[in-house]
Length: 131
Image 1 (cartoon, rainbow, N blue to C red):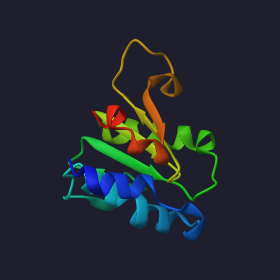
Image 2: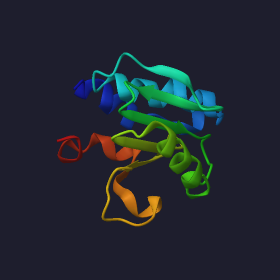
Image 3: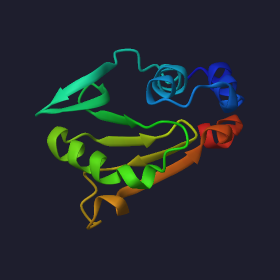
């Protein structure tokens, strides 16, 4: 884990980023994943007629939305992707807010209930969160 890079991300001034989905993906999400040594990222992964923003070894999928987008409006989309790819973890983010799901968590009925952790980008400066 690259703590220095994570701390830089936590201090990112989001007002200086054009709020497009691609900017969030390339300026926030990819550096975030790389700081945890995820370097083999499959971008725009084809999945049965859909395109998943980031696929990491068919074990983690990431759906990125533009800054300011309400990620609650995109939970079903991530659920659909998870049903196709069967990942261990699924992440939904708008660059400011991150939500991590465990799609294979069987004792929860709906995908929305399968949240295992959520945090704000600025919270990454907290070493306890990182641990």
